[in-house]
Length: 226
Image (cartoon, rainbow, N blue to C red):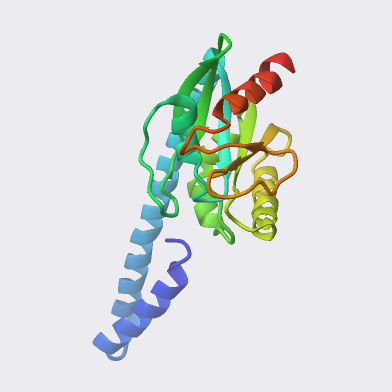
């Protein structure tokens, strides 16, 4: 809405001038009244976002008391939700579209007697407008509050594209205050591609290949390495 205000001002001015020749006081009132309504709507949405973020923060605190938290992060459409399925057995909607996951979805799994909570978060994308980053602030804060980030990559893509996306994701993580959070690089779709990142964990959420190895590595980092 904020981005549209300058265009709305221009549109309303032209519309009022065409329908009310001479413009004047009545036209100014129409424009002012319309923009006031829009500003009130923006304030209402901002208050709703603040309340949602407060509730989300309280939920994060409660979850962290119960188990260690891991967040799936990465470029959009790399298979994060499918990886959540493979790690936890919980089924969530999966579609080959941008922004299928718009808010954090959480499921748990246990390994070697330790309970972990896994967050599926919104996928990153190039040139994401600031207003959208603000709108997704709650799910991004879930990433920043994690004990570990699984940075997921698509192994079917050329190395150059994977590295570009990796750099963008790392910049975004730093920008939301998650730069210091422990991180593991995970290459998904290994059944359809080939490993391109040195030191990454190779998995296929579709076939289950590498999932146990990933759980073992998570346990090493968060439990054995504490």
